[in-house]
Image (cartoon, rainbow, N blue to C red; front, side):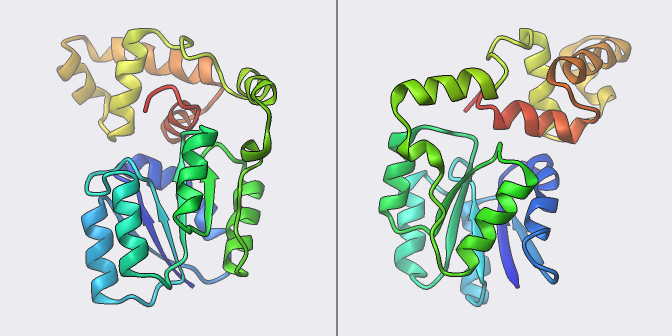
Length: 211
């Protein structure tokens, strides 16, 4: 099983990698950080079973990049992994013939089932596509923390955590003491209900706070 896993943030790839590894016993995962890297990998060897892509990374240009990949590598099964849970955008993506659209907030079990379904030749379509506007609002209110849960300073720290920066470098960039950054990080963990940096990044950005 050979999989291309493409996302421009190493922390996101690290946090989601166990989900990808769970889809089969022997999975070879090749990571990429841009649409250009994905194209280079496929040009060098198109024999991949699956490509998991974030459309918002450099070199993808959203739907334009996805359409280009579909035309150039029509036999490649592509699954879009995204923090966006907008029904209209999901429908646009599915119309391009991708094998599935998987929201990043899914649990390990849900994501494993979704990817295994794709590998059997089926398509995975998230339930939100079939929801009414009222159902979508209820799901959003109950599933995700409010966008204002973190303070502006904490959101700034969260962005740098996503980029893999240590507390010392975050402190230097923000012009504050390292102990101040540590206080922000602890507060982020507490508010998001997580225990480490990888969990905080996944919880915060998969909840669609920022796009």
